[in-house]
Figure 1 (cartoon, rainbow, N blue to C red):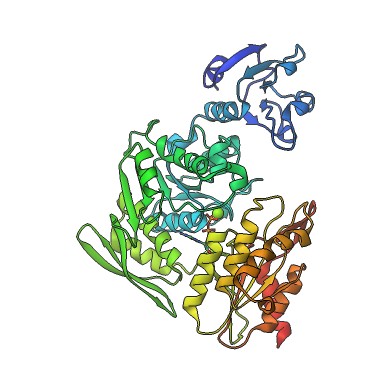
Figure 2: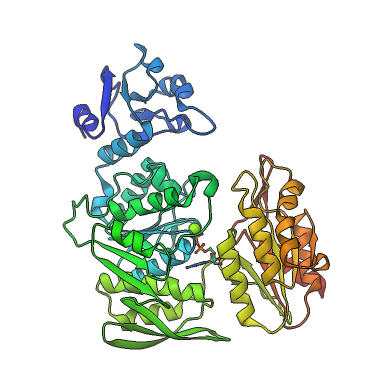
Length: 494
Ligand SMILES: Nc1ncnc2c1ncn2[C@@H]1O[C@H](COP(=O)(O)OP(=O)(O)O)[C@@H](O)[C@H]1O
Ligand SMILES: [Mg+2]
């Protein structure tokens, strides 16, 4: 086990007093998880201040307390004061757990859209090539088929270290991770040694959190600018960048390691050409160096061509033959809640998709248009307690790209669901006629209505929740699965 002095030297300490009461084996910022041997790190969050839980942590036998607020320096317990406890949580966790990310090849995927799909595709190609791989993402964390539960969509720094350790213990040589900009700003991946960083795209999302695009870019860019500054593994590191995105140049400039580009429109190292949308999925020709190879995906949508290209670029860097990468990707049926079909033998198409941003909704609806000459009926809403600016924009896009819309609730949280809808409607009114949309607050009723509207050839898009199996109304988490509700509505229709 590590010496106290050694643990402390991993972070910037302003002042400290006392020795740990017992040997440190565990780090947490959650007083509920404190046990003997825990280092409790008090973080002042948006809703609660961890400093107020120090007494609880001490009562539960915490070994020592890390604070930011000097008023909590007390003779009652051993403490360490730092400038920023979020940073300290990451630094101390990495020290206590022995820098587990240095024992894996770590691939991070960042960008507004496509992270879950791309990480899943990367994990698939690595696994098919015989590398045991841990996956950290929105749907779940897993190694092979084993699911490893954690509390957050993006684990906190200490949970991330614990996950990496679990992966190492289970024999993984790779970890593939979705890296949100929140995770970067909130220091959750501080101390994680990434080897490959992938950029999908950058569009409006979470702007309430990041104020403006420049800051958002800076947040995403950290993954690229910090790549290569640590290298415990002595392996070559790479940035993989979507060259069709308007921020590709800025990120390429920020990258401190060699860049591999992928894309469709602009010049790129790994390129898709001759794209064709077929009933069985999307077809394209892969071109890189002097190779030209056809590939037929079961997944559809132009965006999945980008996601597949990113996975191919990673696979090529990791030394997997292109033929094997293609064979792996051609077998993938799809990712849960990502343009997922709901089939009950009906004569029209029903799709559940996780798109809940203006850009991903637009992509989703454009993809749907490629599938049919019939109408597009869209069920959507916007989350409560989240970026309000996107509401009318999503209304505008849905109105422009659909034939009929049912505006409903999507995790209203503490907000009044009707008030959220009221902010979506002005956008819809800009792009479509008043008889081309209705408002139905109850999501189940909204899905039933959309499905009862559908005629043969139509496509019903149920956007927003994807794989989620709940809806958050007020402070309650109510079981709700769009796929189940849609299946039920389809069965009841007949
Ligand atoms: N590369 C992409 N570019 C734009 N939109 C995408 C891309 N990949 C997926 N999407 C859309 O965004 C939705 C969310 O995709 P997902 O892979 O879950 O991304 P994320 O994890 O970044 O939210 C998908 O259902 C699809 O509609
Ligand atoms: Mg995701």
